[in-house]
Image 1 (cartoon, helix red, strand yellow):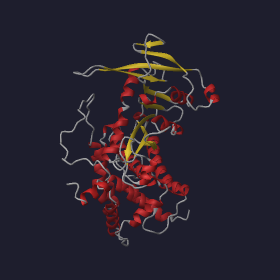
Image 2 (cartoon, rainbow, N blue to C red):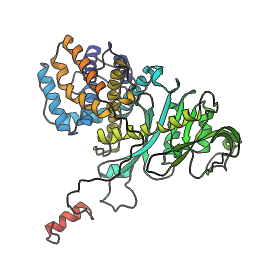
Image 3 (cartoon, helix red, strand yellow):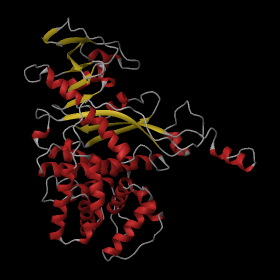
Image 4 (cartoon, rainbow, N blue to C red):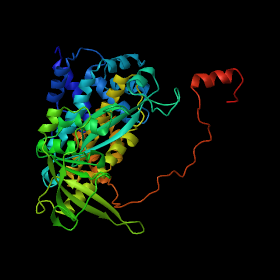
Length: 468
């Protein structure tokens, strides 16, 4: 790597300063200079004396996905203002150079940055933030859409029930979150439909993330005999909701307490396409503990949720412990909401599949850095990080950002402290069993829906055969 180490260090300090990453603060080792230098070397990148170095390009891409505008023009204007304020030579106000610099960034480099920031944050969390001292990983899936271009349609086709020219390319994603701090540890992406294009398929691609002693927390779609056996063989415990196709009978098995027992799940028939030798090598039985969670909310019908787990010691893990842990799975839904709604990741904006994936990873990098600021504030003010508002933290970072480069080192420390004080004050309301209708009060504008490709609709207007 032909790299100007001083230049890289200076630019990295700019990036770290924007997210309150100081070596003197908790979690200051996240996105360290050594980490970025290693990832740049592994990606084979060179850091020349140019405007759009890899570090500056990543920083600009970060601000682009975090800002409310999301445009290339805004982020280039931000760079021009930064260079003028810091006495650096001006650069072109056109967006072409920045767009080319984004294309030069290897996808593997951006993905590695996002993964490593999340994992370093989780490694740094204190034991009191963890569930019984264990690392709990929450797995959940969702979808994202992207612009309707030929390249995107080929890689991630629109849903088959949509007419050509009227739908948007859609991809299925699955993420693994840290329950203790909310960081994204890894993500997988595939087509929305097709063979192997499912949440289970994406989970299989993430096996290497899980280490012996970890706990996987997931919904009913992961309650598959083969996947649970794979986890058990890796020494990974699981807490998942029992799939609706599996019947639970608490009159059978080894009774541990009320609505709590250990049963044997027999090996199912061999999967289609599975190697016979691989199937024969699997054990014939999987011992699973089943417990029932009863949710009673005044005014609503009582719900009963059956939970399956490999944590079979009732003294170490009571039924209430397990049911309380499973209820925390909802945090994954909230984390996905933070990504897709607060950070507006639900509709990506790049025109090619490779750039779409880079944009996705940049969202995750920004998300993990915001989570790092939240963890700093939580540690400083003795709070559980899940009590702090993600949106409040993001708004604070955006509000404080313009002032980092205008203050002295002494004022910078005060700015750090004030940022963390504000973030710690933004608490999530305690609303257990909250019930809200999934409906909007505000009526949409009365525009008709596009029922034919835009080119055809435009031609019809020009020919006078359509009024609008």
